[in-house]
Image (cartoon, rainbow, N blue to C red; front, top):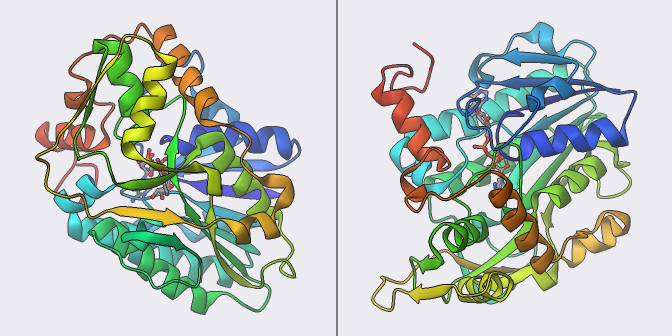
Amino acid sequence: MKILITGNMGYVGPCLVSHLRTSFPNATLIGLDMGYFAACLSNSEVLPECKTDVQYFGDVRNIQRTILEGVDAIVHLSAISNDPMGKTFEAVTMDINHKASVELAKTAKEMGVKAFVFASSCSMYGAAEDSARTEASPLNPLTAYARSKVFTERDIKNIAGDGFTVTSLRFSTACGMSPRLRLDLVLNDFVAGAIASKQITILSDGTPWRPLINVKDMARAIEWAVSRDMKNGGEFLAVNVGSNEWNYQVKDLAYAVKEVIPGVDVSINKNAAPDKRSYRVNFDYYKELAPDYQPKYNLIKTIEELRDGLKNMGFNDEKFRDSNYMRLNMLNQLRGKGLLNENLEWV
Ligand SMILES: NC(=O)c1ccc[n+]([C@@H]2O[C@H](COP(=O)([O-])OP(=O)(O)OC[C@H]3O[C@@H](n4cnc5c(N)ncnc54)[C@H](O)[C@@H]3O)[C@@H](O)[C@H]2O)c1
């Protein structure tokens, strides 16, 4: 099996490549990435890309067809991957996350690729705290990032068929250690604050709901999607990926971190404008489709893993929210140095 992983040099990608290397030892793993965050390594002894068979530095907006020759499955992770970046680079977000993704799926089908796995997001449910949303619930994307995922899912659905299986995995918010750690994810941010300054600062009033998933459990879901039979879910499948137990209110995440790392202060911004991005999600369908690939990590184990990972890095940066562990800061820095143009292409 030949698997192309786009966006493999980010937060999820290195964990996924490691996982696929173990689950499909004979597969040829090909990475393709623009390398925006290539230098954002967190205590990696070996460059994570050494685990691929081939690594391309390239732009999914302009992918060479030859790269797709003989490829059986594509895992499409490449994206401008959060709301703050989507707000700053809105047009580029639509270009990369939506337009390029749809073009890639079309070309992949023409080139005989059999499986296309798209990294979608539960953020497409937007404001949804009254009841847990299922795949049949209406979508309510509140940001450019979430809209880009909705548009892509809508369009790749029409490309699925004739032996081309498309799986859109609507992931919960990721958390956990990775060779390219991000600290702009809620639980990672809280653990970083607890380690660096014994302080967790919740930017909202703490009430928004967020489903979470450990990044290594995301990798297991992707393994399932790459190899799933189309009888299990059909030629196009959109499914929420996470578990019902991992729907948390942001303040509960902070208190869980405080339980693991004693002596931490939690401050809630009681005057914060309400964060409309609050959603609870129902994961029954994923449980039914993929009973052997259900998330294994629990919250406490994930917090402990982050604590140990950050301590091993000698992490003590109280101002980490200004650092390159935040994806937007890294892009702004590359733009500021004139290395990327306004379309986020290398100059
Ligand atoms: N991290 C989460 O909480 C989460 C949750 C739901 C869905 N997802 C989705 O999973 C995927 C991976 O997320 P992540 O956390 O690893 O993000 P990330 O930002 O760490 O990694 C994204 C990767 O895509 C690459 N990329 C961006 N534009 C590209 C382009 N034009 N051509 C080639 N490569 C490009 C970047 O260089 C980066 O390495 C994304 O699609 C994201 O939207 C992530």
